[in-house]
Each structure stands twice: as C-alpha cells, then as structure tokens.
Image (tube, rainbow over all chains, first blue to last red; front, side):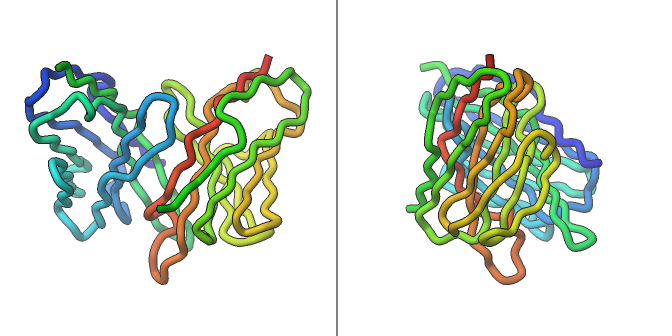
Length: 114
Length: 117
C-alpha cells in the first residue's frame, strides 16, 4: 500500500526566502503526482501536476520536481510571501488493474513571516 | 471558473441522527468525490461517483452512503451519526477526459466541518 510522507510537518521562514517542501512515497509505480494548497478551513487548490514521464513542472514562483526512482518530489517556492502561508499537500496517483488510487500526504504547514 | 459548493460550512449533530451533506458543482463534471480530512490522517476517500446513479466505494465507506440523482449534485449520508464521524468533509469534482484519470484536475469545495456530539 502506497505511503506518502511530508517532512517537516510545519515550517516557518522569513519573507523573501526561497524554500523547498519535501514529499516522499514508497511505491514508485505512480501515474502522476500532484501538489495542492489548503488555506485554513478551506478546500484544496491544485497547484501543479507532474506526470510520471515528466521531471518537473513550473507555475510562476512554484517549481515541482519528481524523481520516481528515489520516490521523491520537491516543491520549490521562490521569493516567499506572507500570502504563501498555507498547508501544502502532495498526492500520488497509482493506476493499476483498471482502478486508480489517490494517496495524500499529511501536509506541511508553511508560515511566511513578514 | 468551476464552482463547487457545499451546503453547510459548519454542522453540529447528535449521535444517532441521520445527516445529509450536500455538494453541488456548476461545470457539468461527470466525476464527484467525497473525502474526509482528519489531523494526523490526511485526506481519505469515502465514495466516488463517475455518473448519475453510479458510485464506487473509496478507502473508508463504512458508516456512509451516497446519492447521485442529478449530475450536479452528490450527497453524502450518515445513516446514524457517531462521534468518530466528527471531521472535515470535502467534496470535489472533475471532468472526464479520454485517457485521463478521474483524479486529475479535481476542484474542491470549501468543506463542511461536522461535529457529532
């Protein structure tokens, strides 16, 4: 059974810093990996989706990488801003035997201090 | 923009009550999902529906049922609420694209925080 781990559970950085959030997974036979953002008391917003054949995806100040062989993904946030404060979740999608299994990590809570 | 709405942001119910959580999406999506989110456990899929009147069990369907009578509406039903069903419930929807997973490009609602006393 796939396990997705995000370390650290919480991270606090001063405004303007570049930072990296980590996601690791146990089964490398994934279909894709997604990064989401969740604001307090709110639903999830999809940030980036990396297909299994891709190495990275970029959107604005965000860059997500995927290394299937090592079971790792990173989310790089450049020039962090207080508005980036949120919980970031990664999720792997496994495809096999005609079904899909989406497994979420528990998230990293990011605080960007002005 | 896709909009997924959930009938209540906060709900308090008593043990044994029948509880309905409603989710509506306005973009004609075929796929709809119900998740629950708990501290330390993350998001877990309860049920998935890929069309009207069609449903599949997720990871934790016990104690729940669902109803999809119209394409835009997906209801989660707690037949007899229990305290261990106190949680944040998230609804999501996605479009069917040929050759693509239904879990791609999910749009989430704001969540319903349910407390069962």
